[in-house]
Length: 311
Image 1 (cartoon, helix red, strand yellow):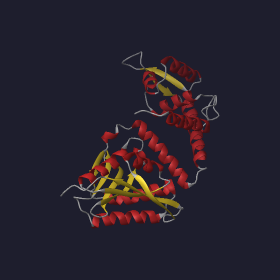
Image 2 (cartoon, rainbow, N blue to C red; image 1 turned 60 degrees about the vertical axis):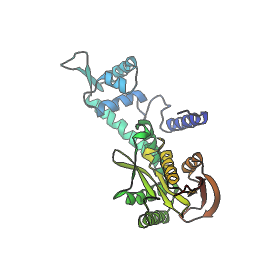
Image 3 (cartoon, helix red, strand yellow; image 1 turned 135 degrees about the vertical axis):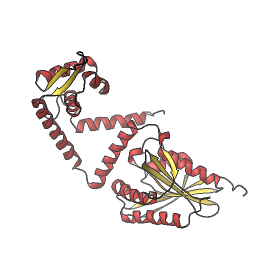
Image 4 (cartoon, rainbow, N blue to C red; image 1 turned 135 degrees about the horizontal axis):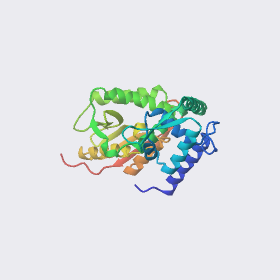
């Protein structure tokens, strides 16, 4: 998809900040005599028994000539031995020496201490928000296309997950207290108690058996439905899943002959508000409240779906 200059600038700003924080701009890493690439090669060899130089070059996207020089340095320092295989003398397996294992253990310990110290500066909500964001970045760049995510109707166990996951994520990311989780539980309980499958629906997003998101459509009255409980797990963010969930909800509302679709959200939920704007919703009112702990600005949004079709 097209990427704007502001999006590129944000990604570059993140890269500059993170590389500075973990010391990648220094000549060597973790107070050692080795560069980042040399330390990474030690890591790969330590964790992959019998790996070959050609495999490392391909998987780390390293120029073979450059990797050869790195391996020569590590071999000269007696951290590494290269042994030809019996089946192919040209193919050499890489193995750490006892000195190499000791060196790697020191680097690994220092790296863990460095990251632990960096994360310990965050309070609990910011810590979990940062970790979830890291997980989301990994998922976005390593996941398959969003179409591989299955959207299905609810079944046993799903609604308990909806309540628990809302409570966890909104506490860690926004500081919402347990009153928010209680609200979600009431919405879910009312949905099941009054469920009309012709006019109401719950969608659960799933990938390889793992729940990744949800959205509900419930009746307010004959002409108006409410979009409720949109959630996209950090592991699935950035893949278009939120837009798919909102789109499914809108199409179902039209098919069920509703005239209007409403929702209630919070001003600080920027990602969700962006989805609603893109789908054509308009904010119609707002209110200050502290129902979940921090002071919030609650917003009501509406999407006109057209006249009710004859039944």
